Image: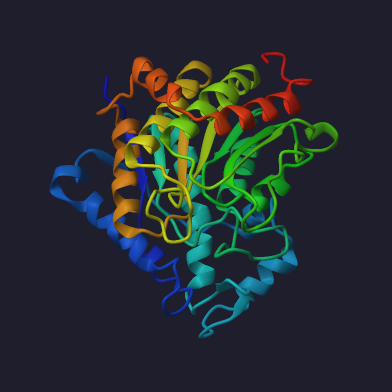
Length: 351
């Protein structure tokens, strides 16, 4: 059964420049777009329109004073928002289009126009905090998207999964006290931005609604699949999300210049299948991926293609293949899985 997969892509996303030789370059999206526009691929997807997000939408996550500050950079040659994150004249408009593209992708899925969707937007978002830019990110696209879904569709449970190499500090902090959002992150640790330890599990009403799986360098396909199946899947099935959002960073790719992980395109497809299975069980397949990092351009493009083929159901990572892959995980993976489970098991009955 093939699936209808929506795509957010717009040439205006190439206009934001973070500066000469910056790893978060327009070339990243240009390469993905070229792959999507190939005649063998282009007919498979449903295009999703792009729009600028409103200030009101962005304010669900960011401070009005911060939004005004970013707005003040419009038309200026270059403004450093933080040591890693600078703007170009079009960055403010592009950042609003990134948020709007993600919100439109969520609308298309929630309204049944497509089965699932992937928003190929930039600048990325998951490091952006309430009142600061960070780590190449200006507005937190996925966090604002989650709030958009909660407010517009009265959702009570949204699962946000973040497989980027770097911990999504901004997303975690946005929902740290909020049990409407279960935030699950695998990431290289200790590493930028320094957050995402095992001990960080939320506070107040949101206690245990943040699950961090900090990993040493070298984790590959088997480790990630086992973590997704042993920790994420049981917790998610108990949580019963009404929508699954993915911060899809591809910097865990085995040749990424910024990372130390060993994930292949096949590994990304396998993780995607675990998420699609959860979505099928809990929320009619409602799944939206949002591009975050990934700086090896060929690897990024190949990995994105593998994820999209899984979303379309062109490839289908079988239960059997997933369990075989999981069996290859090393002892270090088993240790971190046990540590995470013992940290969260007081709350999640499934463990």
